[in-house]
Image 1 (tube, one colour):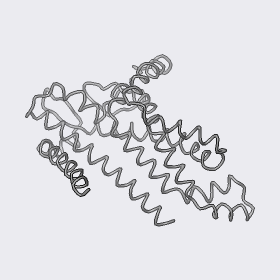
Image 2 (tube, rainbow, N blue to C red):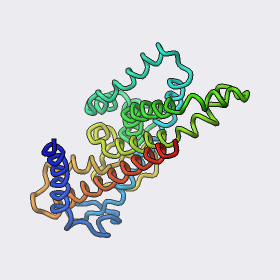
Image 3 (spheres, one colour):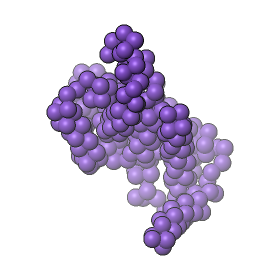
Image 4 (tube, one colour):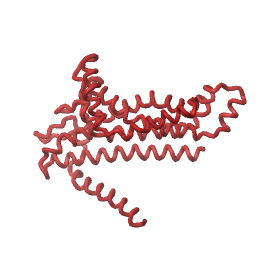
Length: 273
């Protein structure tokens, strides 16, 4: 057991060490805040890519919030047991759908729909939002529903005894006490959206020269898709190769920060309860 636990830690350590050794030489202020990514001229600025990654991730989580939180409230507070036993497993089954399948679904249905009805190429931020929100929904619904159900029944009974309605109890008692778990589900969903590769790669367009988008119908390039697109033809040992590893380091740090925020939110909620 000690060997198994230690080996998992060492594997993560060696992965981090390898990424840093390969990408550290490319990490500087020009790399982080540069506006031009053009490997042919050895210009490696990833600020537009970082901005696009955040926009795509935040938009997907917002859609998951608008759909997922009401669904979690319904399952936890209003749905009969037989309805909950059907809906919740069905939602959680979305986790098992391969991302490449969702990407293909978006490429075949969502992208043409956006192109024919809203304009543009169809491969855009909006398509990425829709696909990533579908992938994020199971995390948001499941964790939020568990957090709402974890609120002690005595809180609800006290509120109802004082004359509050069911909805007033949910809004003023249950949700404030479950807010840490709900926040954690959104942060974890954000981490999942930022780190997703294949599904978002297939539907966001990936322009050759990234730029900061001004419309949800713009094609963009995110951190993960940049690595996937260019690693196949990069020259090993070149500055381009080190820049791609540096993108991996930036992505790792970004996702690690998001996960730490989620752990903090969960821990804080447990302490408050």
